[in-house]
Every structure is written in C-alpha cells, then in structure tokens.
Amino acid sequence: MKKIVLSLAAGIIFAWQGMGLAATSTVDSLIQKLEDKGILTNQEAVQIKGEIASNEKTSQEASFKNQLPDWVSGLKISGDFRLREQYQLRKTAGAGGSSAHLVEDRARIRARLNFEDQINDKVKIVVGLATNGENGNGIGNNRSNNITLGGNNSVFNNITKSTGATTLAEQEGSFSKPTVVLNKAYAVYTPAPWATLMGGKMDNPIWEPSRTPLLWDPDITPEGGAIQLQKKLNDYITPFSTNAIFVLKDLVPSNGALITAGYGANTSGVKTDPYMFISQEGIKGNLTEKIYYKGAGAYYNVNNPAHFPMDYSSSGNTMSSTAGLTGTYSYNYNLVGGSVDLGMNDPFGELLPSPIYIPQIGFEGEYYRNVDPKHQNSAWLMGAYIGSSAINGWGTWKLESYYKVLELDSWLAAFPDDDFYSGNTNTQGVRTQLDIGLAKNVWFTMSYFRTNIFKRADTATLSAPEDLFQMDLNFKF
Image 1 (cartoon, one colour):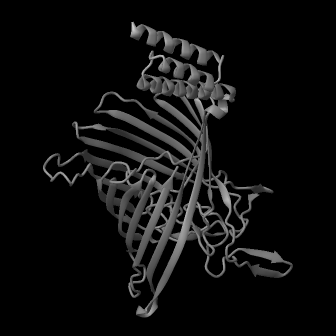
Image 2 (spheres, rainbow, N blue to C red; image 1 turned 60 degrees about the vertical axis):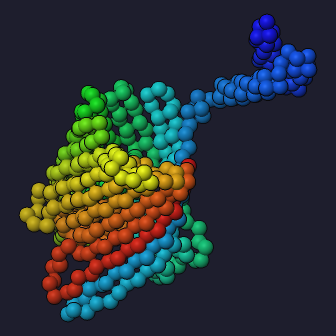
C-alpha cells in the first residue's frame, strides 16, 4: 500500500512541477508534509528532490536549445595554447675550416582558436584563428604560429618601408602586440558516410604517420580542394583515398606579361598558376586483435615550378635563372612513394610487473623519390614509438624517435618541418620527443633534435650540426 501511495505522490509532484503550477519552494513544502505524515521517509524525500532538480535542469536546457538558431546549437568551439622554452645551438661552417657557434635561447607562445558549425546534416564550416608566426622579413610564416616573447626578432626584423628616398628598418618594441590571422577557413560536404569533399584553406588532408611528418610541417594549412573516400569492409580492411589540388601561387597578368617583384617581368611564357596535385591511396585495419596497420602510396605532381619559388625562402633547393628570372627552381617536383604505420596494443600483456604498463608500441616509415633530378632526390624517415595512443590525463605518456633524411632536391624546401634544421632540405638527423600527461587536457612535452647538413658542395668546409631543445607546456580546450 505504501508503495502505491509513494508512486502516486511522486507522480503528482512531477506532474505539478512539470506543468509549472508551483514554484520550487511549493514543491519542497509538499514533499516536507508527506515526510512529516510518514508517507515518505527522509531518504525517499531526498531522492525525489534530486530527481526533480535533474528533471528541471534537463527541461531548461532543452527549452534553451529550442530557442537558439540551428547554426548556434551546432557550433563547436575548441583550441589550444602552448608555452615553449627553446634552446638552439648551431655550429656554423666557414671556408678554410673556420667555424663559429650560433646560440639562441627563446621563450615562445602559440594560441589557436577553432570554430566548427554543422549547418545541416551534410555540410559543416570550419574557421580557425591563430597567432601569426613571422619568418624574419615581416611575411607570415606558413609553417609556424609561434610568437617569440620580446619580439619575433631580437634586434631588427627585415620589414622595410619607403619614405621618399629613404628605406627604414622597423624595430619591434618590448611588449609589442603580435597579430592574429586566419589560420584556416573551409567547407566540408559529406554526401555519403564514405565520401567527404572539402575546399578552402584547410587542415592538411594528406596522411603521414609521424606527428612531425617527412614532407609537411604540422602547422601548414594548404589552400585548394580535396576529395576523401573511405569504406570499412571489415575489421581487417578499410580502403581509403585522398585526391587534392593545392594552389601554390597566384600570378597577376599585366599587359600580356606576369609581373612579380624581385623576379623581373620577362615571364610571358608562364601560362598557368603553379599548383600541386596529390593522389594518395591506402588501406588500414587490424591484422589480429592487437596488431594494427595503416599504409598508403602517393603521387605528388607540382605543376609549373620552374618559374617562381613557392615560398619567401628558396634555401634548400637547387636554383637557377630561367626566362629572365632569378632564384627559380632547376628541377620539377614529381614525387612517388609511400608511408606505413605498424603497431600493437598491449604488447606485453601480463609479462611485466603490475606497476609497469605499456599500452602501445609501433613502427613508422616513409620514403619518397623525386623522379626529375638524377641525384639528391630521395627523402625518407624511419621511427618508432611506445606509450599511450592518446595523451590526456595523468599517467598517459608517449616516447617517439625517428631518423630523417631530406636530400637537396627531394622536396620543395618551403614545406618540411621548420624545427628540423630550420625547415631546409639537404638535411639529416634525429628527433626524440617525450609527452607526459599532467591533467585532463594538460600535458608536458620535451623534444630534442640533433640535425646536420646531409651533403656539402664544398668538402673543404666544416659540417654545421645543430642541437635544438624544446620544452612545451600544452593546454587544450
């Protein structure tokens, strides 16, 4: 009988409260009277109050969401912030066996903010803002969002402006305010679960296994369009495909010729803007319950590279003078190669003592060859990792190390990781990185690079090895 009375009382209270016929204080008074008359125990009264509060919160949230426009309710905001201490030591080489040491100790920050809005069931828009890393001449750095505390350049940057006949070098002041730029902006259309189309200034759709890949700096956001296809056949086989076209430079015609400052005007033979086409075809899945794999082959075709450098810096590739221009590429850049990642979850099982647990181990590799030059045309990477698959929370960790070689004309020097010997080609070396989770969405990273020039044109000069240490405190939201 008491259960029937209790159910009836609870039902009346919920109905009353849900219909909005009484304030919370009135509901509390009713529950108190039922408790005083012995119909409800204290524990039952507390339970009902908790359920009412939870029900009211859910109702209010649903009502609030219904009042918002669809584009607001589908909006997701995310971002990250990084504090970095970086120490760089390079032995600079000179003719006749002379050498000197370049030492830089810099504190840096990076901040990024992303907005993602699902405007309907098939289309979403992604927009990202970020701090504007500079390259030393005032032009935004396509490979970095780092801001150096005290100014991006310790004494002078190379920004120049003309004041009549005088050219002035501008000095960055103490506590100068860095700029925030559009880091990415693109649309994503998903007509089917297995197909994705995107266009704009986008996150790089090309897959590479390492977190610091062979060909691409992780901070690059290419411009153009891409089509991605992926269809899971079973747990063992999932084919995937990415085909992309990236616009590299927009050439401005003037009186039948193409004019670019610093490269002359004799460019009437240039008929199309330089662009890059990439086709990557791969497969991923599980070999066993614990062993996973992912591999892909790719073809890169850079159209019309001989006329214009693709970046503010042409260091690292063989350059020549063509059609009245200076500082143009001597070779085409058509690459063939592939990438692979092979790993195992819980590799040691119960073989290790209980305080020691290794969630994952794996091996990764990449190899690409530029088919145009006959020499100095290969790029490759071999590495391994051990630890957690994701860094999030205390106790998660990952150690990764690889050896990388970028021969002189293996790839455009505008795009590789700019922490690896300043992003140049004709380089080789080792990178080792340790990530340690400190709390949810907070982790610490230590990185060490030991890099050098791969081959020297002048054998009389010394090698120029570089040691680079980075310590990062990362925050994600």
